Image (cartoon, rainbow, N blue to C red; front, side, top):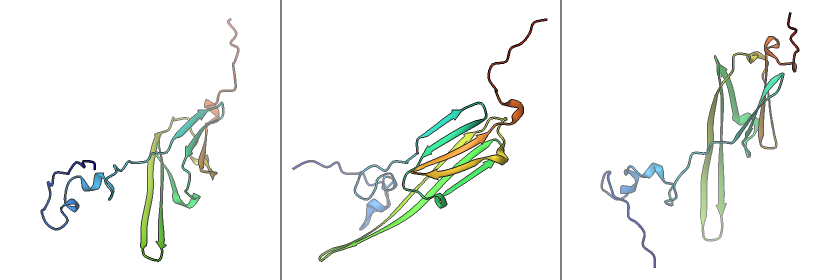
Length: 145
């Protein structure tokens, strides 16, 4: 036998006090802590563009909303899934919602009207091209006069 820590009831008393406690929304129904999921991101820069790779497996390209507002790049995704199981002596129905938001401040030299986005094998890849006047074409020799 093990001891289970009881939660202090700070809410309304009644038949289901856990629904009114301040801890209800910080734990899932079985008492495990809920965590906010944030996908991992790789950002690379080359001479012509910035490349953003965001790891978000299980989504489809329709689940994403990508928006550039001023100097900000906002990536949002949301998906809902419903699981139904039934057997001889049980029925189980679950609703699963997964979502995230990531925001990035863009450098001023990004051509925001030419951004390319692809979602493949769980990776969202954005290519943010640089303006030509700010591209680096390798080392340049400067003559001294």
